[in-house]
Length: 286
Image (cartoon, rainbow, N blue to C red; front, side, top):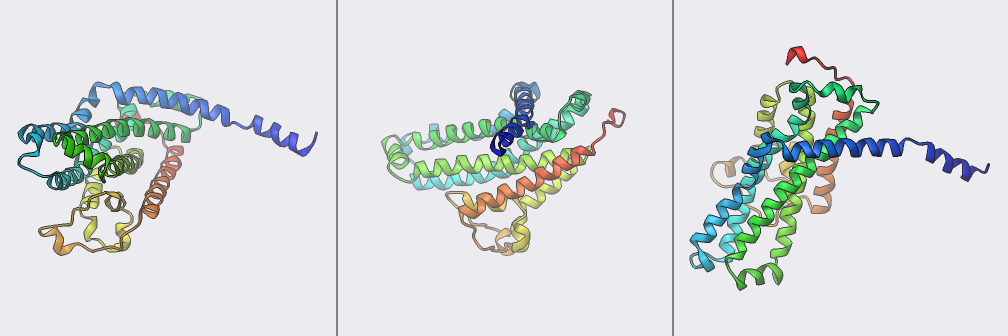
């Protein structure tokens, strides 16, 4: 047998097919849980709150009579900043921490651990399922919010979207939303494997993400929000007392910000994969 045939045979015997099928099975099970569980109702309410706010604004300003596209563009950027800091953060906290903590509370995690499957695949499968559910939900909310915000301007709004910078803004908002789900999802998934009650460390993460701008420039790079702000199509400068303490870090271009955030999240997930190897189940403590 030639070396080429031997290499092909060894590839066929590799466990890739088994791993991919197991990963797909975990993904399907967990995605169904994330999307259809009753406890996920509050996530949908938080996710689609901006749609209701912008819809009320559009009803009160038909045809853009009391505002301009420039005003609404800045308003949308402001809403999106609060969306990142608030809705996406807390929803990812609730969704991704429950991926493992929920199994412990419901006393069902041992079924996964008894299965002949690498625990790293369990982490990756659960993370991908949570990411798909979060990105789909929040991406749809951003799309509807954007459409309502510029839809009430009529032909002027359509011209801004399709003949101006509007479509680029939409793609940027959707991309930042997906990256926010990746970043916060990886953080809270790892925290759920380290702490029995992730509320207190979650509050610490919230403070870190909220006030990261006052940290030295080097420490800011360990914040998810540092990279997300670089990718937003419309920047909102700090105002009030925060502007006095803000440390202006060197801007990061998109071709560095996206890989930088993905590298940070990959390192966190790698830690989670190492952590689950030593995880032992003790339902009595919960």
